[in-house]
Length: 268
Image (cartoon, rainbow, N blue to C red; front, side, top):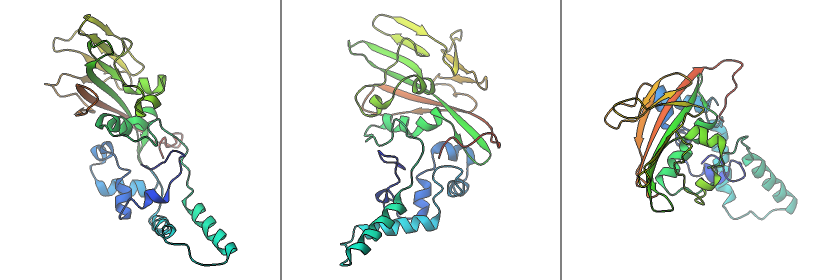
C-alpha cells in the first residue's frame, strides 16, 4: 500500500521494496499494462508523476537509507543534536497524499476484497496516464445466500454503489457486499423475484435470447456477461476465487478521453 491510515508515506513502506524498480512496479495496475503494453513506459509514467507517486530515485534511496538507519541503536550524542536528527528523518518521511479511499489501511485477506480495492480509485475518480484519462466502470456479479438462507444473485454497478454508499464497512469486514433489488440485476432463486434497473453508468437490455446485456451510457458500448461469449470492446471478464461467496465475476469496462490542460489528474 502507498498509504497508511493517516495517509502518510511511511519509511517502513519504503523498506518493503528491494529496488526502486520494485517500488515503481507496485503502483502499476494490470489495467495500466493492458493499455500501455509496455512495462518500462509504465514505470516512466510513475517516475514522472503522471501516475502514482512522483517519488524520484534519489529521494527513494534517501528515504530507504533513513528508514534503515532509524532501526539502528541511537548514537550517543548531545541531546540537542539528537532532536535535530529525529526531526530531519520525520520531515523526510512526511509526504501526505490528498485522497483517502475506503480501502485505505484495511487488512484485506480475501481475494474479492483485494480485487475491489485494486479497482476502487479508478471506479471513483478515474486514473490519468500521460495522454489519456481512464474511467473504470466495473460490474460485479455475485451469487450467494442471504441472511434467510435463500440463494440470490445479481449484477452490481460498482462505480454507482461506491458513490452512493459507504464502502468502509465492506472493506473492514463488518458487512458483506450483496446484490440488492435496486442494483442492475437482482434475482432471488427462492421467491423467484427478479428486478432490473438502469444505473448512472449502464442501461439494462433484457430482450436478448442469450441473456442480459449492459449498455454503457458513456461510450454506448455493449457489455456481454454471457460466460460463453466475449465481454465486448474495452471490457475484461475476471472470475474471482474467494472464500466469501459461492460465485464472483468482475467485468471491467474502460472508457477514456484525451487528457488536456483543463483536466487535472484524478489519481496521485
